[in-house]
Length: 165
Image (tube, rainbow, N blue to C red):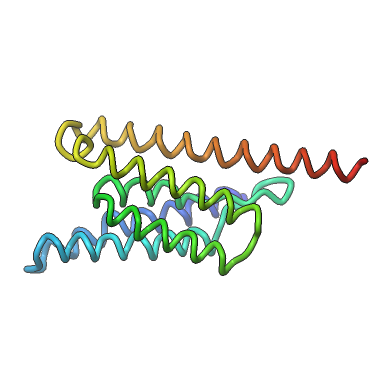
């Protein structure tokens, strides 16, 4: 199996683990809803760290991961506090693993995600059907991935242009 597919499946496994196994395990316990939300948020935070630790390596040394999917899901289902917590985990871990350009992009994208989750949480949890929620998160994830990719490609092109001069 090609390395790219293995890495994508590994990132998907981390997300599925945090989104399916942990909530099922929590449903069997007699815990308040507030504590369940906190534990789900922590599980998604761990998922984000694993997605960033085992990224998807593409061509031209471009590194990608699925952490944005986890942030959107955690923020829209858990609310503004969850989105803020997940964003802090993402930025801090990004600082730890390095990459100046990546840190700036991560801070911009996570700020947009927190603000968006803050404004859309109520509508997301009360007005949308399950199918609409999945579609909504899919489009948000694709949108943020596109913005990140476009920004990094533009930076790479600019750096190649400067190096040639």
